[in-house]
Structures are given as C-alpha cells and as structure tokens.
Image (cartoon, rainbow, N blue to C red; front, side, top):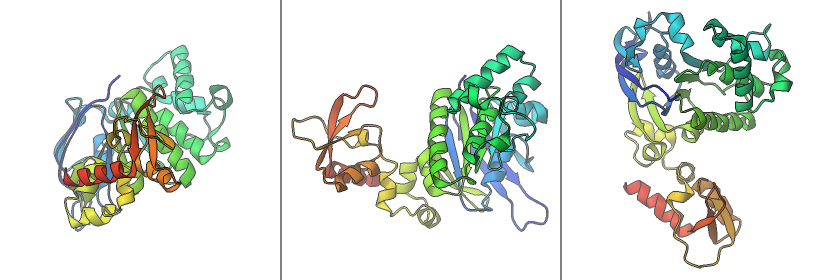
Length: 321
C-alpha cells in the first residue's frame, strides 16, 4: 500500500496564555510516500504541527487533508487507527505481551486471529526481532532499542498510509539511535508509507530526511532536500541551525554515485558502494587510498571510480546549483 498525500493549508494553533501562536499560518504539501523531517529547536511548533495531522491538537484555523479527505470529517478514533503514531516514550502497554501490543489496533479493526498473528510475526521480522523469541515477552523484558522497534511495529500494524514519529529515538543511546534511524529508512523503502519525523537533532534530520522542513517561531522558514538546505540556506537562522558551512556535514548527504567518474582503466586502491555517502569516502581517502573503485550495491560490479578531486567538484557543483 502506497503512502497517502497530505495537504496542510493555513493551519494555526494558539495555546491559552501564550504570547504567540505555536503554529502560525502554515501550509505544506506532502506527496504520498515522502519522508518529511520537521526540524527546529524546542518550542518552534514542529510537534504541535505534527499532532494536528491526527487531531491530537485541533487547529484554530486552516485545514488538513489526508488522501484528499479533511481529517475533521472522521471520528478521532477512526482517524488515529488509520494514522500510525510513534513517540519517544514508546507507550507500550506493560501488562500486554509484545504480540498483543502489536496486534491491538488490527484487533480493534476486527481482523481475524490468523491474520493478526501473521501480521505480528511479519512485523517483528520487519523490525528485525525474531518472532519466536519476542512475541510472548513483556515490554519490561526488552531493552530501550527493542521497545522502540516494537513501538514502530505497532504503529504500522494496521497498514497506515501515514506514520507520525515525534522525537522517536531521543531516549536511546547513540549507537542504538543510529540503528533505529537505519531501520526507519529500510521500513520506509519497503512500505512506501508517508512519514512525518520530528527531531531537533540536525544530524538525525540529515540522515533520514527526503525533505527537511525547518521551523522557527511557529512558521516554516525553509523546506527542501537536505543537500539544498545545506548548500543554500534561506536565512541566517537556517545557516546557524544547520551549521551549513561545515563541509563534512554536507558530504554526509551526498552520495558516491553522484560524484563518481566513469571507468578509465586507472588503478584503484580501495572500494566503496555507489550508495554510500561522500563522508565515508573521505574516510577512505584519509586512510591513504588515492582512487576508489565504485561498486553497484545490487551486484557488486564496479561501475566507476572516485578520486578526491571528484568529491571537490561535487561539493562545488552543489553549492552553485
């Protein structure tokens, strides 16, 4: 099932007693299957905007459509069963097994037991947890990273076309966080779900985003691909927030395939896959490799080469684009 498009028009939210709107006349079009990261510091409005999509926060003005339907036309229960939601605190029911937690929404939707059981096992495998080992465990028997994986599985159990993720990995350590980020990208690629991902962590945003929506004081100040936001920040605020002058950070969002040169018979000293980023290539150059063979990640065949000069040209080209 493909992700649903989301259309946000002139949405505003004001909390009682606040000196400004939490969300201020925001409009955004999101294509089905996009992975959007809402980025900004605490209080910028990103989580409030996210929660308007499933009506956990009801806007004071404006409209939100999911797959062409106004979210206010559905009952809150029906809307939230059709939109996955993952939060930092996970929110697993402590007295329910992993399997029952994941199967809860399908059960509420009236799925039969064999279908629910098959879906639970399918999702545990998807988040790389062995069903035989984890299905009957209680949440307290899991690590923080395992709980987050179960939380993601539960959020997508009923095959939602939109998934909301609000600072989902902020409570786990850096190594687990990187693994969960990679897992999110893998699941997104496998399912094509439309994902809204809230974070204040710039590196996390650059790692997972298809498009970054930078917010400040309740407004969207820039929405573009990670590379374009780094190369062409729309304001001094964006430039400072993302530290766009950090060349190594920019290399992290550029792929080897976009910088490599054709095969020319010149000798190579190392090897890298075409879908790796240029920051990883830089590490190989620093280890003493002058020219890398670039391999197709699907079959391992060498399709080009990469030298340090190719990286420099790619960075300059991105800056000028």
